[in-house]
Image 1 (cartoon, helix red, strand yellow):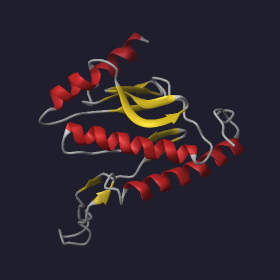
Image 2 (tube, helix red, strand yellow):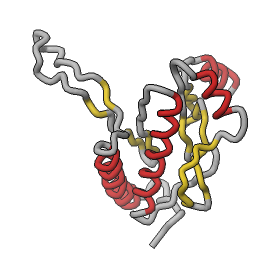
Image 3 (cartoon, one colour):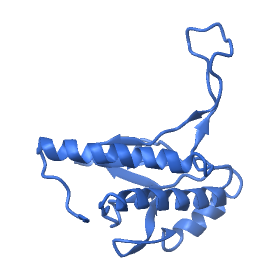
Length: 178
């Protein structure tokens, strides 16, 4: 079975069922990305109450974040080309995890997006290459008749604008003009 319809807004049972499925999707994303070297990590920090001892300074995995039916999977890379490769691989894993459970995300621009922020050497060239024409991250999948995920540098979520440089200018202008 496969569905392209969401749950009815306000339907408690629908939200419970959807979130039960999302737990499994997130679990699969973590289980598949960690051994493949796609899981992003940050250096571990000792707890604030410690005297700086080595209690737990091992790298910490950044896990996906979910709010309602929105999913954000953090991906870190050393170079722009590595980021593109990792993002494509993570996107395939995410789409496959949904498809395995009979869910088809809306692949239209503005709905399912990869929000990219290049940094460091080669970032200007990467921005020009990625956003100079068709800003689609090829995944090789054919989910919902889409062969890639649309890319953006900013994303509007529930009225807020998330910008790749964390600037508030567009957010302030949008709220002032509304």
